Image (cartoon, rainbow, N blue to C red; front, side):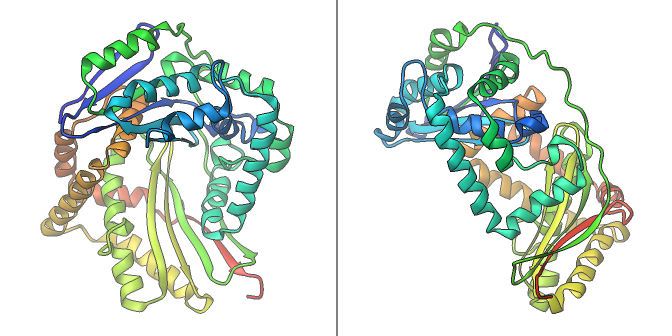
Length: 411
């Protein structure tokens, strides 16, 4: 299905996929501003802003914001990552203008009432405490903090309690003014909204926003430090991550790394880690690998949770699987099967139109354009077994690999 994109005079970019076969519309604003753009004294500010965007605008109070879409059966949501903030909604097609105008109001006219800021601080502190009760999630943040030691990209998105308590309204306003520049904003729309409807909305609302260019220069690329750490925590299992720095969004090897990771420990039950460790030995209930690309770096990780008596052997088995990618080229049949599996997974994921809307928006935000599904299929089929080996040799190099494990306190 075709999509179109264009840029307004003020720098805001718009991407749209018209789908007459559905009765819904999904839209969102993606802003290239996240937790890595914070100073140490602002740690948690981007996430706090995301919460407070819903707490009042120049024309609406918090109740009116929350009721505006929910009252017609739609959904309103937001998230913050290390490099972006997104506010988005889903609703019936007849409520497109209602939905999009609300998002517009939230993003471009927030008031940040001081009383609401203080309430949201407490909500976030509760969120942090809940996160601390999930060691298998906290492990990932700690791993990135050690890997990107001293750089903002390694810090937790949620923030730190001491810093959050000291954040004030003026800091929220300053951060938005500095980072929510029109040339760093994308409006993404997928669903039963015609190009003419979208053009009318843009003319009435988005084109009225004054041009504001981003003046803070390029983000500083992080440096990485290899490490091996074992920490005692109040856990029952041993939770472990093995990983390293990987490829950035703008590197050609990124697509090969996506395919490699999917073979190794992706979501399918026939991943190598699942078959060769969980199914064969029963050492783990949960074992997976992950790859995430940032604008100027990336991270690869293998996670597993296991009983302490199986930990050492499981770790050896994981490293053996990594070495196999370096030493043994995929057969033509194995490569073809892996390519077909990834293409099928992406095709199914695109059926979730809300996620597809976000995916298109992210592509424009970071690359300036979005590829068609046909482009993606062609790229996947062009990946060779030799390229997979070369990528594995770089990322799985033993000298570059790091590890972090949480062991039970009585271990």
